[in-house]
Each structure stands twice: as structure tokens, then as C-alpha cells.
Amino acid sequence: MVRRSFTLIEAVFVIVILGIVGVAGSQAILRVYENYALQRAFNRLELESRRVVEQVARHLEYAIWDTITLDSATTLPSWRAKTMEAIWGTYVEDETSGRRVNEPLFSGYVDLKNSSDTTITTPLSKLNETLVGKELYFLRANTHAPIQTITDPTHLELASIPLEISDMAYVIEPEAYSLELVGAADNQKLNLKIGDDEYLMAEHVRSLILWREGQGSLLRLKVCMNDEQLSLILNCQGSGAGRGFCAEGFCKESVVMR
Image (cartoon, rainbow, N blue to C red):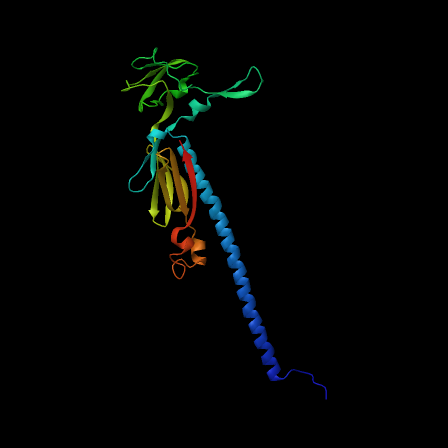
């Protein structure tokens, strides 16, 4: 006798096997997707945290070291920044090589013998009107005063008499710089403040911590970032709370030396 169909038991058996394979397959696909999402989120956090920590470090590298202060409660810094126009200056053609090189506007040296009150003589400088309104910061003396006029390429007039001057100085921006975190504790915005103006540097920041080492000659900083998708995958509100990423976020460190 030839069979032309499955029995009921055989059909049920096939359906059960297909169900088991389907469940196992869907779980495998889910794990693959979760691993992909995790890797993608970590890569995104790696790039973003590196960008933020490098950006903060770069700002502090252009700060006058003695003006950097850390808030006692938040450790967030404030500082006075060097004027980049004075450092980079203008491009001129080098007579020897024929290449265009940048010539600083301010040499950094002050001739104390030929400087008095508000008149400052600075040898080897190429001062111009772009520096008017900036401030002159005297190293070691830790004093500064606004630049009122440029008399000639090596002489300038200050708007006020500083308490003390020294033979080394920087041209600095007139506004104070600082960093601030605003928003919910685990999802803050990092802003750069220049005077009364604010500029967004990063979002989804959990914390930014700075501290001094090496008798104050070294500044360490640590930024920790958050990611909502990663928090959901790791169940940070449930079983994953208080562990690894859920406890601190994705963190990156850097060092700024004097």
C-alpha cells in the first residue's frame, strides 16, 4: 500500500521542530543585532569622547597656565586664553627658501629699560591694529592691561598702568574662558563660555573632571559620555545598573602639561 500524505503525528512533529528552529534562529539573529548595535554604539562613543577630550585639552594648551583655576565644587576650569593672531601673525615669503612662513605679530619680549608706565617697547615684534582691544599679560608678574593703541611695529600703549611688568608677556583675549555642564545629571551639555557668549561643545556628557598633578605642572582631565541606545541594550535601569558602562559611562582621559 502506497502512502500519499503525512499522519497527524508526523505533521505535529514537523511543526514542533520548525517552531524550535524558528525560536533558536530568532534568538541568534537578536544576539547578532545586539552585538552589532553594541559595537556601533561603543565606536560612536569612542570617537565622540576622544573628540571632546582633545578639544578641551587643546583649549587648555592655549591658556595662560597661571590663570587656570578649577572650581572647588565641580573641578570645571576657567582661564585666560592667548590671542592666536599674535602667535600665528601673518604669512610672508622667506628670502632664503622662497616659501611662505608665518611671522608672529608679538615676539613675547618686553624691553624693560625702554618701557615705562603705559608705553611698552617689544623688540622683534610686528605689531598691527588687529591687537588693539586685546590685553597684554605679563608673565611672572601675573598682571595684565588692555592694549589701547599701536604706535609702531615695536611699540604699544596700554589703556591703564599695570601694577607690575616683566620682560616676558603674552597677548591675551579680553574675555575670560570657562567650561560648564548644564542639564540632567546623566545627560548634560558641555558648553564653552567666552565672556557672555556660549558655544556647545558636546551633548550626552555624564561628567568632566579635572585635577592637578606633579606639583601643579600637569593637568589631567577625564570625560565620561552617555548613550541612550547603549543604556537600553545593557538594561541600565534594571539588571545592568551600577556595573561597567551603566555605572560611569564611556570615559576618556588626557593630560595637559605646563
